[in-house]
Every structure is written in structure tokens, then in C-alpha cells.
Image 1 (cartoon, one colour):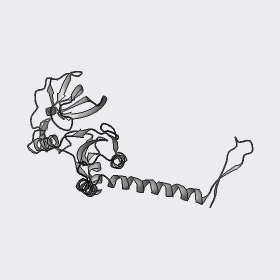
Image 2 (spheres, helix red, strand yellow):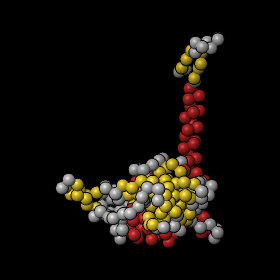
Image 3 (spheres, helix red, strand yellow):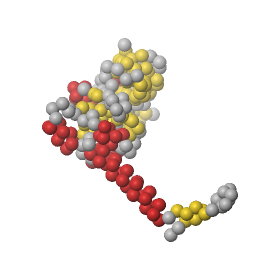
Image 4 (spheres, one colour):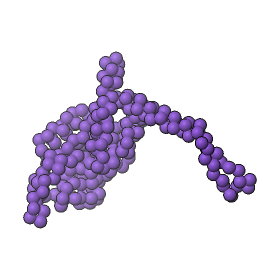
Length: 230
């Protein structure tokens, strides 16, 4: 079956023919691209990390940070977990709030909105695979030199969440202002300086900041307990 489209603006008005072979080539190319992305992502898998780390002493896995669409953290987490990639989204516990005299249960949520942590080797193919995962916007620090997070900081961050540090039950007193310079005190961006860009204390106990990582400004939404005055 051929599809013909006549373009009146062409002087000779020659028909443009799209043949089955052209459509098949496009479909095959798309399939090949998908296979390449899957192969690249497999380079970040636990199996590959374990095999390479066992064979090469100098190759050590580390935690890296993916910036993802806010609200899609769980979807990215599941996709990576299904691909055998070690992934972590640290969440707060559910908590109660009172609004207009009614008690509402707020569900568990990511402590650092819009970010997912992965543990793998810093291999070009692995980073390319992670960068092409659906809903992933970027690798923090860039794919060529991604920002490494210390294992101890990830362990501490998860322990704080498990202990309920980010689970708020009553309003907390906060004395921060938009434009103020603060320091991130825990989580994947611990020890970085940041600028407060907005504060939402009424409902979510959240603060938005701009963190400078390797000279790049990175927007991050944090729990209010994750920042401190300088």
C-alpha cells in the first residue's frame, strides 16, 4: 500500500510516495533504539555492578541522584527496580493535620520531591541508560561527571526518615525568609549551601531552595527539617 501526497506549491507538483519499506525501516530503527536503551540500563543493574566490582578492585559502586518529574518518583522507582537497578526513594510517614475542624491523614510522600537515588557504577553506558528512563529529567552533576553521594549520608538519611524526623504532626516554628542563604543539613544534598526560593508552611512543611552543585543551580524541594541557618 502506497500513500501519495500532492504538494501544489511545487513547480512540478510531483507526488510524494511513502512505501511500506520506509515505514518498516522507521519501525525497525525505533525498535533498535529501544533495545540499545534497555542494554544500557542493564549496565546499571545489580548483576552487572556485582560482576564488575568483583573482577576489578578499582571499580566501586556509588550512590547517584536522578532528577525526575515531581510526582513520578514512585513510577521511576518501580521501573528501575524491575530492571534490577538498586534504587531508593526516602519517604516520610503518614501524619495527621486538622483543617476546618476536620482531621485528615496525609499520606506518605518522598522527603526530597523530584529526586530518586540509584546505586551503580559510574559507567558511560549505565549513565546513558539511566538518563533515558521515562520521567527522568537529568542526572545531577551531569552524565559525564555525576555527583556522588557518600554511603554514610544515604544510610543516615534513611535512618532519620525511619525514625520519623520528617513526619510532622503539629506546626513547627520556622524563621526563614525567601532569599536567605541556608545550609542543607541532611539527605543527598547535605553540606551544600542553598538559597531559599519559597516556603510552604501552612500545608506541607516544605521549602524550595536552589542548591549550587558543581557550579550549576539545582532546584530542590525539601522538608523544612533538612535545612539550617548559616
